[in-house]
Image 1 (cartoon, rainbow, N blue to C red):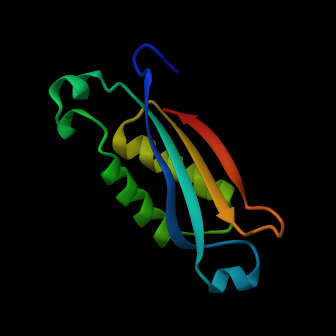
Image 2: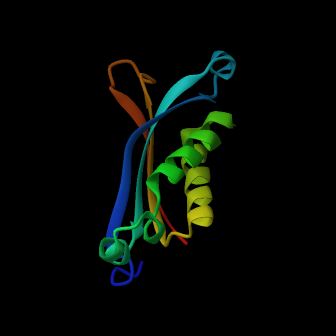
Length: 122
């Protein structure tokens, strides 16, 4: 990653989406809520100077795209979901890197949530 060219991060935390996810038969018949955190590499200096949305990553657009993508998906593993979210956002929003955390609250008794955290580069 080129830290000089993309020293800044835009983030979305706890984006909640109802989807079909899981390996068990009963999980394939219901919708469960997953929580998604995104950290996306960018350089905000141009946007800070112009103070216009056109010069930055529009995080509302990213959120809507991820909600649509995950809401329509039916992955068995959160690992696959995280990988496909990363691929989609990197490609569609022309980012140099992304960190994706997908958690499945309540999946393990006694744990607040479980999930995966990945970082991918273009």
